[in-house]
Image (tube, rainbow, N blue to C red):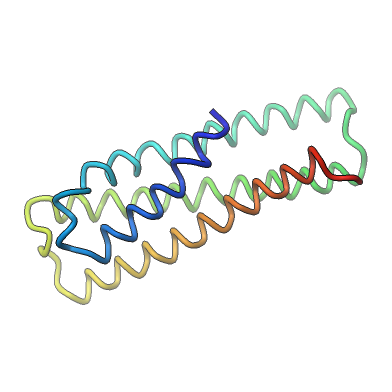
Length: 145
């Protein structure tokens, strides 16, 4: 399940950006964006919860060096941020899909552009923190500290 977030979060980001910016594609990809808007945050949450459980077990078994704990703490923080950003991206994406299902151009132009901008920003930050989470996790596993 760990790798599900690595797949679904970027797919949601890409789908949300396209859905937000290209109104003519909305009827074609709305179902996929709606599905990803639900799936990606769930995958991120499950990954975060399993990581927290693993982290707690490592600490209780005293299998983490002081430097390793610093790296893992950063990894855990990045994972939490990734979850919240992905949840926000999913909610905003789902709202846009619901508002534009019957008419892809139902929203006033300024609202459409505003929501698209929010989706682009959330997708960018979700992708960035997903990368940072993975990088810090790889450093914790494979790094020398």
